[in-house]
Image (tube, rainbow, N blue to C red; front, side):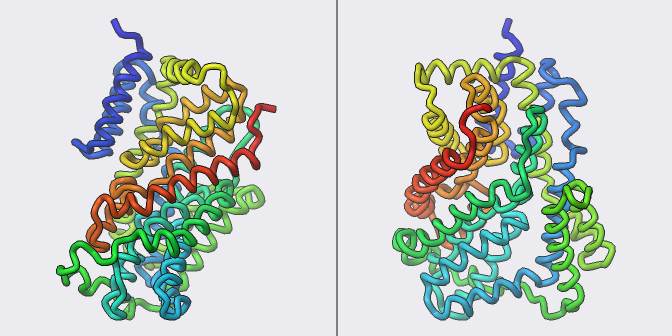
Length: 429
C-alpha cells in the first residue's frame, strides 16, 4: 500500500507530464490535481478550493479588467507610438526601446495583454515602415518576461509567494516592489543584449516571409474612442497602482484596491461588462487557485520533506547557500521552458521552504530564487503564452527562440544569484 506522500508525488509526476505535454488543457490538469489530493486525503475540501475566493484571485481578475480598459480605450497604444519617435530610424535602438517598453507595460498589465498589444503595433509599424518583423517581435517577449517582476502583481506568482511567506508566521513579507530592483536590472541587461548580441542571433528574415496576410490591418483603430474614456482608464490604472504601493498607509488591502479600480472602469463604461468578463484570464485563474493546495498536500503528506531530504543527500556535505541557489536555478529554469512558470513556482515553493529550513538558509532568499528561476522563460516558444503568440507574427521556428534565448538565460541566472546573495540574508537570523 502506497503512503500518502508517495501518492502525492505520483500525482505530481502525472501533473508535470500533463503540464509539459498539454495532452489535456492546463486548467483541467490543475483542477484534477486538486481533486486528486482531496480524494487521497492529502487536503480537506476547504483547502482544496479556498484559493478560488482568495485575495490573490481577486487581484488577478481585477487587474486584468483594468488592463483591458487601458488597451480598449487606446491608452496603451498612444504610449506605444512614442517608440517610433524614440528610435529615430535605428532598428537596434528600436529593439532596445521595445524590450524596455514591453517590460514596463507587463509590470502593470498582464504579460499576455502587453504582448498582444505590442505585437499588433509592431506589425503595423513593419507594414508601414518596411521594417524586419523577424528582428522586432521576439524582443517584445523578452521584455514581457522580465518586466512582470517590477511589481508584486505583475504576475500571478507574486501574490502567491507573498502569501506563502506570510503564512510561515516568521514576521516576513514581500513589498509591492519586492522584485523590482532585480527585475529592472534583468530588463535593462536584456534590452542591451537584444539590441547587440541578440540582434545578430535573431533570424535575418521571417520563415513565413511570403505570407503577406500577417502584415494585414493588425493595429486596432482607437479613433472613435472618446478621449475621456482614455483618460479615465489611465487615471484608474495609475490610481490603483498608487493605492497598492501605499497599502499600509491607506489601510486598504491590495485586492480591494484592485476591485475598486475594476468597478470604476466598468461602471463608467470605459469597457462593457462583456469585455470585462472576457478579459479575466480564467485559465490562469483556475491554474493558480487549483495548484495552491500543492503546498499543503506536500507538507501534510510529508512529500515535500521526502524530496528535500533526497536533494540534501544528493548535495552531500555541501550546504553552501550559493551552491543551493545555483541548484535551484539549474533545476527550475530548464523546466520552466516547457511548463507554466506559475505552476512551476507553485510546485517548487514548498520544496524550497523545507530545504531552507533544513539547511538554515533564509526562506525569503529561497522564494525569490524560485520566483526568478521559474521566470527566465525565453528559450522556447512554449515557455509562456506570450512566447507562443510571437511564432506566426515573427515567422519563428523553435531554434529562433533558443539561439538568442539560451545565452541570455545563462547571463540572467548569474546576475540573479549574485543579486540574491548580496541583498538577501542567506542564513536564518
